[in-house]
Image (tube, rainbow, N blue to C red; front, top):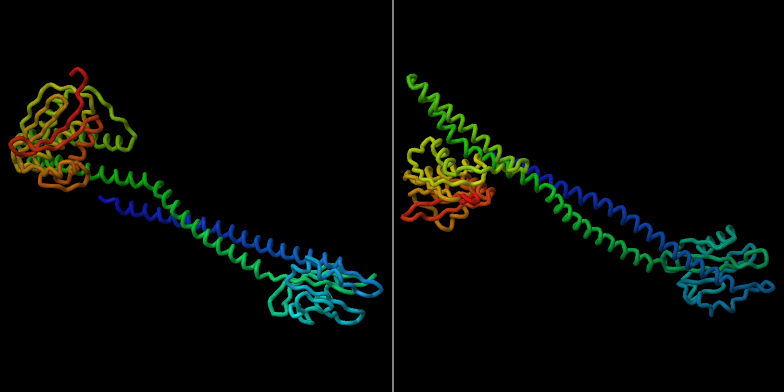
Length: 417
């Protein structure tokens, strides 16, 4: 059974979360950038209006009427006049169109006559400083402020100040470009951070799927041999009714073995998932090995030599590790005899087969590794190493004296044994 589709869906979900994170960040930054650009536009417009209004009001106060004559003497020397982009003084008598009485630099920079008429009419209507947008003499849109100059109880003239918004607009455009570049960089950074966070979020699920797939492979590896043996025993009993009682006893023994295997598999799954702790108890390692080998269907080709050894461990898991070592030797030893030796803190299983190349002797303990003739898929040996490390020991392969392979399960002996 493969869990690849589930893993693929998890990886796809990770990319979806990354895209959602980036999209949400983009939407938020877009709103903030729009608000910032709009605020900057309003601020620049307000500053420009304040500047031309201040200049127009200040210059209007320097002009005055004396016996119907408008005096402009102080205007040319005023700093407010010299700093203006465009400046003009409009004057009109009753029922006449306004005429340019004074222009700073050139009258060509002021609006045309129709534009001046509109500005004059608005000043007459509002009776105060007005702000309008109108084209200057060159056709470019300027921001204009017109401040009235009073002749007794009527407006006899108006100071018109114009400012070119192009410089302010250029600064605003630069701000917008920086906002766009900054938002793009932030979106990329947010996407990278989102991908990293989503990867961390999905990693436990992917690890759980991998552990589940490994467990299924190991369960199939552990159950395949006893199930096949049980099938052969039942078939043999069905063809020889006279042997039915003996076959039934053997079938019961195999069913008991299957029960222990399933118990061990479940225990290992719970330990790996962190839902159960290993219960380590003192036990006779030599007796456990003898019983485990005796339960193997083809144990007649295995010789066992033991010394009394006491270790602290989990009997089901240790039996599973020993069983895998012996079955691996029987399966890949080339049909040669298998020798099992139990000494203090050590279970050695030797076959007389072709052995394993030195460069593969560590790698074959990894799960789902295919090696030389003596290694198989590596699933059984991976379980051996896992059980050994769980008990504070190790597992190793080496070349046996005289040829063949020596597989060893090394366990720390019980203190005082």
